[in-house]
Amino acid sequence: MHTLLLFFFAALGGQGAVPPTTTAQESPQSLLIRTLKANTGTVSVTDLIAIGDRIDEKGHGDAIKIFAQGTKSMRLELGSGTAQRVTAVTNGSGWMSEEKAVNTLPEHVSTQRVTLFPFLDLLAEANNPDLEIALKEPVLIGNVIAGHLQIRLRDKHPEMRFLRRPLDEQVDYYIDAQTFLVLRSERTVSTIQNMDLHIPHIEEFSDYRLVNGVNVPFRIKTTEGTPTTSLHTWTTVLQSVQINGGLPTNIFDRGGEQ
Image 1 (cartoon, rainbow, N blue to C red):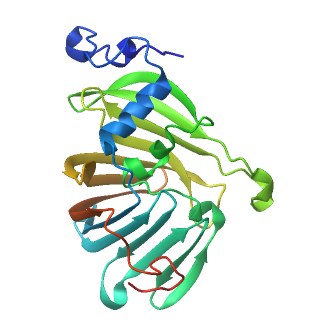
Image 2: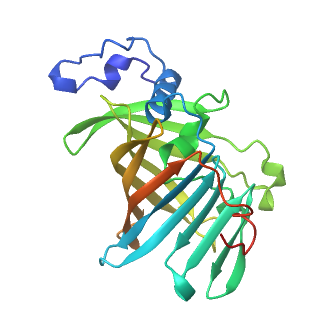
């Protein structure tokens, strides 16, 4: 496993240059912590509200509103009026409402993290001693050299899961070698209907803006599926983000309204 920061920056300018604030022997965990700090600074993000639009590959747009508390509670509202769809997860349970019907989400879906914001995703576990971290080959994303970190957190209680199947988490992060901001994350996700059917899920982050000391991507392109099965792409374009401003009461409650 590569552990040298020199390797992380090997392609920069063809010089293998290391920024003066780094050390050549920096470990993968230290790089991950540095990435988290580049995103959040000294701020501890306890809650977030984001408002914008989600545009699919055909150009159709829907209003989107996201409420997040910590890394494991999220409510996503898509659309408006009677056509609005709401999904909420918290503390390992979740529900989804559409056309006045409210359905329970299975555990393997309800335990997933808030992937639209890297600092609320598995990256938030950067200081967790149980985290498995590997430094992979750097890649070129557009014209930007990106370091590649693969991180994994194993389920500590597989005996409590459905059919005793562990809900391990694994994410590949591609990180701007100059800013340490996350450019892309890759993982596989299970479908709602079948926890054994894993499909690729990619988030591409851009248009970072500073909000209350936190670097927030205001443009997130999501690609899910494969060309040989079913491939879907949509882009979330945010208009406003509130950090640590508090959330409406009971926002995650089953069938609850704002």
